[in-house]
Length: 431
Image (cartoon, rainbow, N blue to C red):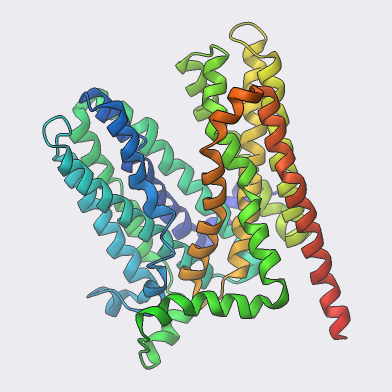
């Protein structure tokens, strides 16, 4: 087991890891502030519940970021690209856009002029999704494949801290200095991420791009080129691999949509839920994150991927057990805490494995666009299926629902095993 001193020394000795943690933190700030945290402000402003529900669509930019991601791979940002390189230049440009959008939301008043809030929230979603694209592109381009699990772990650590600040931190500030002050503070919280971008090393591929003559293909060619290159490079296994990516997190997306309603149906208080899911869940998830970065280099990519999909899906059986036996008070609270701990640990472990796998699939030159495509592919099917989760629970109940979500992982695990076997057979066939 690596000692804390060794981990800290490793973090300090490799500039990429420290920068990755700072960039992960900046990536975690905007997402909740587009809608989830802001919904509390909208509720206080007496915005109709139907309108609040519609505003959840403002996060769609995060699911469709693959549309404009190819242009971030092909073109330099204005002004900053000349001094920082293509990827770091886009990171700082997107961070400035996030800060301006947060300030715009801060100076609005949803009770008096909701359109102002909608426009700047839409801009915040677009800027935040763009920041995610270019940070992922930098991460893949700046480190070799064997370092991607470690890079992903530090990115996840920073991201979870950013989510905590933008969630619980913003709500805490809103009670004390008001929503305007809270959103302005969140804009200022982007500064550490900007410093991380400025201090981050420039990827070797960016240096090569700066020396090469600029290529500016047409609109359609720019969008199609990353998809075409990815499919050609994966060869005959392209379709199975893309289906595997699409299905890997599907059980988690469907399950997460109904986790909070389950906790409320069992009469756990908001304090209980916050204590277990935010405080305990944060540290447990960090454990799963670092276990993932430890396991992947030692067990191998496909073996880790198979373990991730099995453990991630099987953890839903703990939620099924809680649905059957849990309730507020007494020993049931500890059952609640253990259940959330199991689910959080497995989810974090599976996420790191998937991030590392998708990073290995993306090519260096087209890292931003291909990784954005893979993450959108990963999120979209599960998000669509999650929309029907409430109707399924009305028919099956919570217990059978969570058993069913765990069973979704069975065909995904079988596909993972098949892809692993086919990849193992390819070198033998070539020989």
